[in-house]
Figure (cartoon, rainbow, N blue to C red):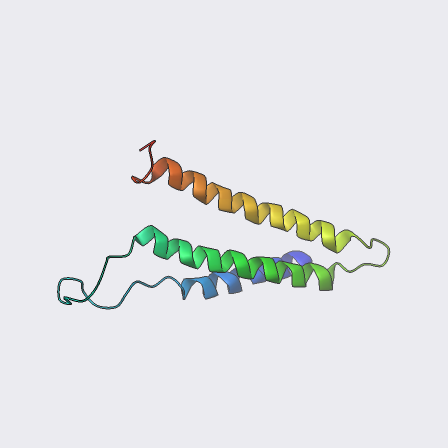
Length: 108
């Protein structure tokens, strides 16, 4: 049941994160007061951060409710710690990839 719940959480969190990936409405060339253009990567990262935050909250809820086993009292905490390590590693992958591929940083 635990893997099914975690992957269901993935679908829900990803769907919610998609709603935060939006640019300003309108065309900059037609609106004189449009303001500064947004960086496309920052818009994508906003949805990613929302997904990460919701995933951590959902993982805690799933681990605490499904893996609360009296015979193994620390199981839920240990699985949640492993999940948090996975979330942190995915965040580091995004940051390292951005550093080595974005034109705003030295290696490019």
